[in-house]
Image (tube, rainbow, N blue to C red; front, side, top):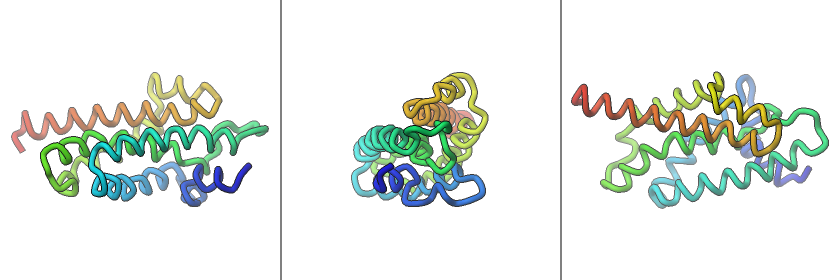
Amino acid sequence: MSRLAHIAGTVFGVGHLRPAPGTWGSLAALPMALVLHVAGGFPLLLMATAAVFILGVWATTEMTEGKDNHDPSEIVIDEVAGQFIAILPLSYPAWAHDIDITALWPGWIAAFVLFRLFDITKPGPVGWADRRNDPVGVMLDDVIAGAFAAVGVLLLAGLAHGVLGL
């Protein structure tokens, strides 16, 4: 395994934090998403999400080659990709309407909690992707969990701003 793959897969060592390295990986993704959004808005965060997915497949392939465990807990780059996806419904309106993304803080909390919920419980397609037992599956289950969380963020925003009028 290359050192670069280890650095990428563990997100600079965050994956070695205990307990709950996946949660630490998701938490690490939040300031990264904020910096990306501030630096380049929604387009940069979207491109970074795709790049993290591709990098994650490569790093996971390198880190698991010849090993029985296809998804070791120290690999958390998948959580970064999924968490970025969960944040996209906040990034787009903030970018499109010139809103300070930190003003959308309730959405950040919802994105984090929902992503962790879907990543841990692995409902439906999330579990299917996880059972692939390959590097793409390692990344894909978090991508799907992130998409579920993104839909949840949109629904909660619609409820808060539409129905409740907040």
